[in-house]
Structures are given as C-alpha cells and as structure tokens.
Amino acid sequence: MTASFQATEASRLRSLPKAEVHLHLEGCFDADTIARWARAEGVALPRAQEDLFKFSGLADFLGFLDLACGLAATPERLAQLSYGLAQRLTDNGTGYADVIVNPTHWHAWHGRLSAMLDAIDGGLRAAEQDGLTRVGLCVSLLRTQTADESIELVELLHAMRHPRVVALSVDGNEATAGRTGPRFAEAFRRAGQHGLRRTVHAGESSGPEGVWDAVNLLGADRIDHGVRAIEDPALVRMLAERQIPLGICPTSNLVLGVYPSIEQHPLERLRQAGVRVSVNTDDPALLDASLVGEYALCRQAFGWTDEVTRAVAQTSIDASFACADVKRELLDALQRW
Ligand SMILES: [Zn+2]
Image (cartoon, rainbow, N blue to C red; front, side):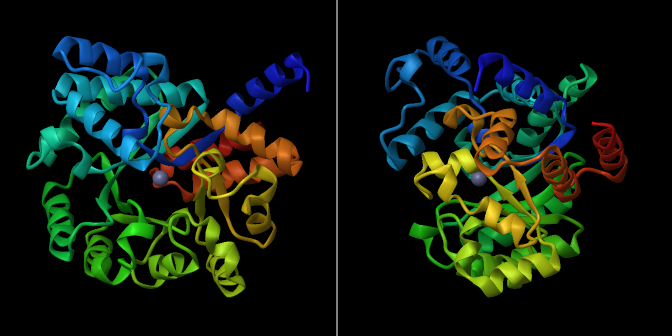
C-alpha cells in the first residue's frame, strides 16, 4: 500500500460519520501529560517517558493505572484529561462517544463520586463549547466488587441523576474474578428500572458463558467485546436475532493476545452471521490505537467495501447511548458520506 493511498484512506475514514462505544477514560492518558504531572508532584515514573506504555504484564499495567489516576487528583487535571479525550475523538472524526469510567481506579476521588463526575463533566462541557466531540459517561463496576457495593453505586447514580451519565457498565478481568453475573444481577435490574442503559464487558476474558450471563442476567443493551461468542453457534444466533450489538476492539484483542492475528479475529465471521458489530479502541493511548486505524485495519484485512464500512459506522451510531437528536444528525451525515 502506498503512502499516498494510506493518507487518502485515513482522511476518508476520518470524514466517516461514526460513534465510538467502547473506550475507557483510564485508557486515554497521554505520556506527556503524565510526565508533566509527575514532575509537578515529584513522583518518579516507572521508566523513561517514551517507554511509559510498554507494559511487562497485567500487574505492571495496573500499577501504571494507580499512578496515573492518582496524579489526576484535582478537578483541573481531571477536566484537562477529559478535554484531551474529546480532542482525541475529534481528531478521528468521531461524532459521539460513550466513555467508560470506573470509579474504583480513582483513589483520590473515593467517596466523592459526584465531585469526580462534575470535574469530568467540566472538561467535556468546555470541549463541546469548542466544537469537539460529544460524550456520554458509562459509570462502571469492577468485576471484583460485591453485590452490596454494586447496588450502592446504582442507588447513588440514581440519587445524583447526573446529566452526563448514560449507563451502568461492568469491566475487569473475568478470567480471575470467575462467574459474577449472578452477583450483579440486582444492580443491573435496578439500573434498568432507574432509566440507565446497560453495557457489559464479556466474551473477552470470559468465554461464551459470560455473554449469556450479560444478556440473561444483566439485561445488557450492548456487549463490550463479546468476540468469544463465536465459540457458541446458539449464542451467535441469539445475538443476531435480538440484534444485541457488540463493541469490538480489534487492536486491543491482538495486543492482549486474545487472537494471534487479525485474520483469525472473529469480527468478520460474527458480522456475516448477522450480529451487529462496531469497531472501537478500548484504551487508545495505552494501546497506541486510533479509531481511524481500526477501520483501516478491518477494511484491509476483511476487504470491507464502502457499503460495509458505512453499515458498521451505522451500527456504532445505533448502538450508542446518544440522544435521538445526535443520532439523527450523525445518521443523516452518514448517508451523505
Ligand atoms: Zn474495555
């Protein structure tokens, strides 16, 4: 592929009207910002700035998250991080994003969820005023939390009714946490009752059983990842029939070793089986991924035509928790692409 073809392809994909539905605020730190904050606080980085995101394993990664979230301890820094996220989305031509934020990672903000959400909201509002991408927040449980903690979070969100919050989410490693669907069923039931949407990480660090639980026990409107559904034909049929969308992150799955190569990634087989799929970046800064790059990767690996690309972008918009006006605006623009 020539450099000029790649540049043209990137600029076309940037102009593709689309939403992103699976990315984490915790995955959007950039190395410059971390280094600047660390210097200001006299905190040592674990390694040189240019190698900051070269993780040696899960423990190293979690240690970094502690450090980075710990540095974002003031409202100004949290707002700055959120503004930077909206800028990153705009650079990719993303019209709207659902962003997952998991309060358990943000030690400096424990017990102050309302203030934390206000700080994030401040950065996102400033970004919107500057014409950058609009964002809704999916507040996330961690897989290792208890049933009581999960219900407490949902009731707190209900009491706050923060206009920036669109959904309840659950993330974290299911391979180590084991089966947790039953534990969170009551929290997700209440979330639905309170008018929150529901999005569930499953079928990445868990197999098909995690996706079944996400649908049957947690009432998921959308599955984050869900790729390992491919291992169970009955599950693939159910997802297609009920049109439950998957927020798939190809580069993340490759970097973390869920699949050895894009050719062996099940995204295209799921799509051809009638499952609604979108492509997403998961932790773009940490994985060095971009949404334009994810679309380009799939077009090249799976031979997606413009028509298929448009259909996937449409799924990203349909599957998002954006309000009806934003969806209509993006879908209209998509027709003209
Ligand atoms: Zn994720």
